[in-house]
Each structure stands twice: as structure tokens, then as C-alpha cells.
Length: 282
Image (tube, rainbow, N blue to C red; front, side):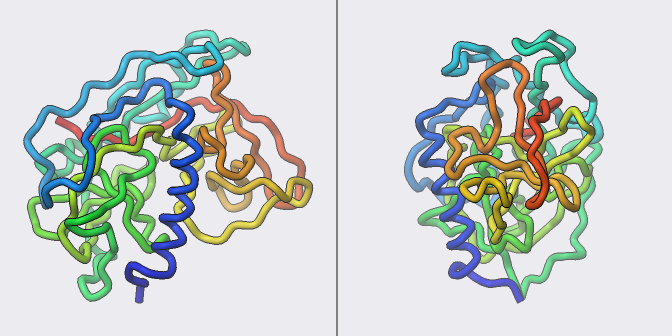
């Protein structure tokens, strides 16, 4: 039975709240905020408004620029397609930014995406907040994409649907399958985080990494002050100092890099080929 609003939800919210507070001093290049504030009207289906356009390139505080993000609505054409091919400040291809858009503004799966409802248990609903307060997905670049709990549900990128309390959640940025889950209640409108972090990373060594969704992780033996931000397969983890304002990613050049390794071995600096965020399709 999954926990409700206490326990693991509080741990997950505290984890991402700490990241968001630290990240408030650094703007993410290439991703825009819709700018809505406060607790807004409850919704079950996203309102029929125009999906925010993908942002133009912006300047990173260290005076480098990343390319404009590409919005992907159709499944199977995401970050795995590779880099933009332009030369980065440190040599090699520029990190390619991709906005995955698996759900449209009517709450329906976008073309090419399928829905799996086998994990749904209405007697053990996920917690996405309520009509007074809800939390945005840390990877969202448009509004009304939700962070839900518990972390065991892997429901940190969820969209509302026309069916009351039914959410469509993207668990795996490299899959074309959405998971249908029942939420505890209707939810308030949410704006995207000011400084979203990628939902998935494709690394130059071939690793595919998924954003951390709470949970208790250790630290590398030689770097006890580091925490894990992404899981990259059965052993490797993306590590960085606690409360990294960039989600554990070095964005000081157009070719992003991360520190990767397991808890026992040395850490290696690996370039990021592509970074996936989430948005809503038209």
C-alpha cells in the first residue's frame, strides 16, 4: 500500500524543495516559465490555452549559450536522436535540449504514445496535492504538470485528464508509454518551476539517466558531501554537491557535463549528449 501525504511524500517534496530553493539563483537556458502565481482554480483537464512556445536560447550566467530546445510530441523522436551537431565551447557536439510532449492540452495522449493502466489501484491513489496546493514536476517547462508521490510510484511527471482524478504519468523518458494512475483529489493549477531540471540525460558514453525521485541514496566513498541526482542503469549515478543549483549538471559551456560513477569507484566527467524536459503538446 502506498503512503499518503505524510512520510515519503514529505521526503520527496523536501528533496525537490531544497533543489528549487538553491536553483532560484540560476536560470535554466532554453526553458521558459508561464508565470502564473498562487493557488489557482482546481482542474481535471488542462485549460484550452495555447501551449507556451519553446524558448529561444538564453545566456547561462557563465556567459555561454545553449541551443534552443526542440519540442517532441510524437513518440520515438526524443533525445536518443543525438546531438545538434554544432561545436561546443569545450569541443564536440553541443548538448541537445528536447521538450517531450506526451500529453496534449486536452489531457489526451499525443500521437504515438500509449497508455498502460495495469498499475492503477484506486484504493491506493497517488498524492498530487489538492485544490489548495500542488507541486509542479521538477522537469516541467509548461504549467499543470505535476509532481506526485510516493516515490515508489515514479509519478514525478503527471498530466491531468478529462476523467476526474485520473493522471497520465511519464515514468521513463525513453519509453513511449504513459502510466494511468488515480490521484487522491482534484488539483490546483501549477506553474512550471523557475529552473527546471532535465527528466532524462543521454550521456556520451551511452548511458541513459533518469531524474531522481526522492528516496534514500548514499554518497560516493571519496566524496561524502555529494548526493545523487540521476540514476544511470544498475550502478552508475550522477553525483554533485548537495543543493546543486543546476540539478547536478555542469552547464558552464554549451556542452554540458556530469560526474558519473558508483558509490565505490572513481567519478568520471562525462559529456551530456541530450537532455529531456517535459511539456504539454498543443
